[in-house]
Image (cartoon, rainbow, N blue to C red; front, side):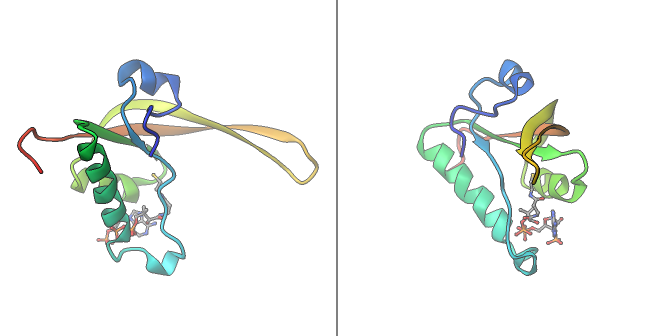
Length: 114
Ligand SMILES: CC(C)(COP(=O)(O)OP(=O)(O)OC[C@H]1O[C@@H](n2cnc3c(N)ncnc32)[C@H](O)[C@@H]1OP(=O)(O)O)[C@@H](O)C(=O)NCCC(=O)NCCS
């Protein structure tokens, strides 16, 4: 959880400090499609609810429609496109800047939900 929200300025501007599930992944791949990802997301939602939060968000790469479909099924709506900026160093020590096109998705909790 990133409690102070997504690092991208586009997301902060539109949805300041929305708690974010960041870096979700299930490994090894053979463990996927068994409900583990769903259970992790529901556990994150419970953490937010316990803090009195009313919304939770996550970012999904535009090239990951299956993950986006999963989040939609769980009640997340796309709210703002943004660039996920990160960098890495190759074996020669050269730094490469990367910007992945993503969509931030948010789920709002109903006041009467547990
Ligand atoms: C996305 C991910 C976390 C979902 O976890 P999971 O344990 O497979 O999720 P669940 O079993 O609860 O739900 C599976 C559903 O997620 C969707 N899904 C998304 N990405 C998937 C993937 N790479 N493989 C299988 N299912 C995927 C499918 O619609 C699938 O539906 P199905 O079970 O009817 O086939 C997991 O697939 C993963 O680690 N993918 C690679 C990393 C990644 O893309 N992370 C998301 C970053 S936003």
